Structures are given as structure tokens and as C-alpha cells.
Length: 244
Image 1 (spheres, rainbow, N blue to C red):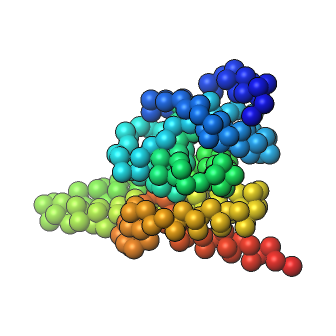
Image 2: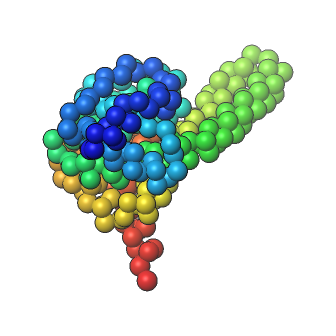
Image 3: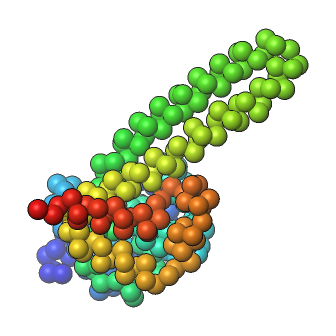
């Protein structure tokens, strides 16, 4: 990276997202090149705010649950095929540090920027609708069965669970669909070929968390991030749609 660009990156204000994960700045050659990629992607999306450092996280380590993580639908561990922004840092899985080139990180970074800056607001709206629906449904159940005496109260609890469970499960579904939507939009930005190459290369490493999400229906059902198989399928379908 040219000296002027490096100096400019260091002088950028910390105004990405003010979140609670401690920031560990990395300024080695790889991280500097990755930050240059983030700058380039942000410029193409007309986003002027920048990450100021790279933090590498071990997917096997648990994550602190902060309000920002909840709003982003982050899982309890750091997914090996995702990246995030936190405290003006770009968070990347450490297992990819020596496995991907800066160019191969472009699709992941592009998808995350689109997701966090353009998709999350719609997910927030969907969550508001879902919580409002849940509140109204539970209020109706309580009002109805509370008038039926002890027998009504006994029925109220299981019925409340039956009504609440599918509504609550729609919340991680919204996050998954939002990330797949960001993948589709990012593939148009960075190229479907490059996106497929990155995802298929990550898939070839057979990381345990990625394999579990591919193998277990229950894990996919509860997860707020899609499996890498779903991501590959969506990007591949985008490539098919773009064929003349």
C-alpha cells in the first residue's frame, strides 16, 4: 500500500460501529492489504467509513455476547466462512489467515459490508414485526384462558409455547436469508467466479464448524448464518441468472 494511503487509513476516525469487543489492531503486510481491499469495496459501494485494523478470531473460541452481536444474529462461535465489523475493526477467522490471499477475502468482505450497511435495517424491521406479532398472540392467549379458571391456565402454557416457538424460529431464518441476500448482491459486485472460488476453497478445508452446519439440520435450523452449501448454491444461481 502506498505511504499516503497507509497514513490516510491510520488517520480515519473510529466511526464504523461502536461495539463492545476489545479491538486488537493488526498491521502486518497481510492485514494492510486486506484493509486496502475493504477500502476499495467500500468506495465502490459509496461507503466512506473504514475499518482501522484487522482482528483474527479463532472459530473454536466462544464469543462475548454483546448487543451488537445479537442485532447481527451472530452465533456463539465465530463462523469460519464469515467476517464482521466490531469496534472499527474487521474481524476475520484466524483459520483463514494463511489460507486465503487478500484478493480471496474480497467476496467475504463485500458480502459483510452489504449485509451490515444495507440488509440489517430490513431484518430489524422484520424482527419488530415478529416480536409485535408474538406479543399480540401471547396477550390474546393469556386474556382468553385466564377467564377459564385453573383448567384454562393449564392449557395456556403449552399453547403459548406452541405459538411462540415458530415465531421465534423465524428470527434466525431472517438473519440467514439476509446474509444470502447480501451474498447474491456481493457476487454481482466482485464477480460470481471469484465468489465461488473463495467459498469452494474454504469448503475444501473441511473446518469442523462448517461441516457441522452442513451435516446437521438442527444446527442449520437454529443458526443465524447459512451453511456454506447454501451460500455456494445462491452464488451459483446468480451466475446462472446472469448467463445470456
